Length: 436
Image (cartoon, rainbow, N blue to C red; front, side, top):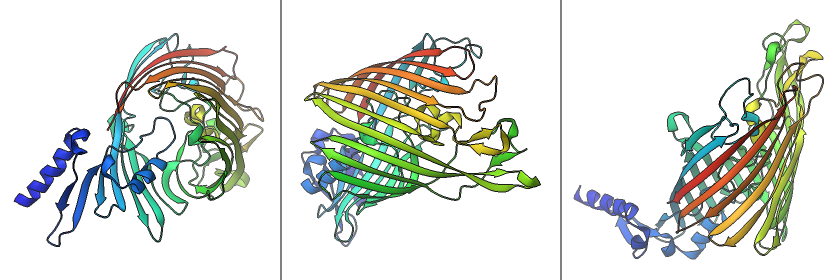
């Protein structure tokens, strides 16, 4: 018992005291009578090859956790278990119109007739993250990565899975950002979701990436199909939801040059199933849908980069920030009440990032998304979402290691299919984030 308490105290003290103190020593802990030993170290004591795997597999998406502060390794240094995350506090003020969500989205700017609120104060801390990451070097599987991360976006700040996957030999299996999303071109933003027209979606998947060519990388994937649909007055009378029978199929090819310049072409094919009460009985029907994306990030000058993407397709509204909550992958066809249709969506954004120094940078982004009508949908008099626009400007400063501060201004507009004019909203976001 005394030995167990001694070991527990050693591990607890290493986690609680400043990492600069912990970094000065390597502590070996015998785990059983056979003298199996684990080694508890800080990042500067880990084998260089192991640190390189951690560094090369950090997600390039903005607002994701980076390198872990603490690490546990086996004695040979061939496997490492990293623990880290960040606490992210975001006070926000809306004025001159609101977006009814902790993430600013033009589609959620309410109708003037539905609320009298033109301003609000918010305080979001639920996007704080915690992660555990294991990396290792094996003979059979090469470099292997196991990653689990979560935030507190569940109801009443409950922990919620953010990412969870295993990766080896170019194969990735688990829950991660969709392969239709380009994490490398994500815009800097205090708002956790990013620009309105950005593809930002996580899904269960199985993918394979081939990156052995000098400038090229290729990925193919199957992903769990999920439909965000709406039926209106036709629900349960003519049409209703059905079970999905095929995975979403995603592929992309990237061309890379220089240190971090790239351009990527991606596509997704979907088979969207639903039930139709045709011929006086329920039958399973389906609608083919597709999406295409062109994205890029490249240096305009030593301290400035351009980033952006263009997305177009039918039945792909669930992938895009501003239309994820609108349930419009499939909608009824008023010309034929027994059929569903996939409406076209165009979404894009472009922006610039300028680094004043390694600790200070600023960015600006313009984004737009447009939903097109077809076959009389939405029906006359409906206030269905037609298009939205968003402008974002921000500046970030890292005053001390592991701490980030920032301020951001967002202005958004939205327009419905009905003639009620544009609605707009403004938000100021403030950021205080500390990584551990």
